[in-house]
Image (cartoon, rainbow, N blue to C red; front, side, top):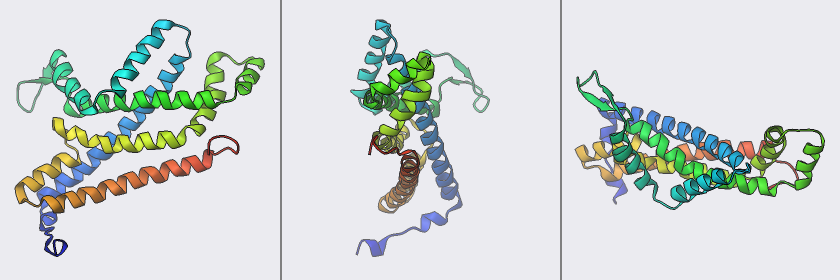
Length: 238
């Protein structure tokens, strides 16, 4: 009976259409940028773990433990409300006043990338540990430098091995982008809150948002599964 009484008339409103369009595009942009930067953090972090400098290991472990063991929403609030307040302000031509140099969108990208990057470092580390030492010894015997060995031998194999775990983390990252609405980042959930506040169509708006995220996550899973299938090596990983 509830489904028969659903009202989606708000979808015909041009203002709401613009909000939803901008929200979806910003959600996609936020997800793509966070995925990219979290992967960069993961690769750079796991490479730094291979250095012999103890202080580097301690800094990395501190970063990993902090971002893995604290809620991402708290990290987001800290970065936006605390760090943005400390940084210098810039002139805002729209208001004629000053605004923080770090916007809500930028804060969301940094916070969520750091959050997912901490997990990616551990994921890549587990993949590297699964690479047979004979492969490393063989590359060293061919005269490869440490960087060449890492980039040409170890990381390609480790990437293939850890793809299933990496897939799960990136999917969780896309879902975690909804937290950005808490600091007024103009993504999908932020605009959805404004729409159902105007129309009291909470169920209908949430069903629409649910469907959009099902599609976005489904696309990401399809891409990751395709990459996993193309890069699969018999005897490694799955």
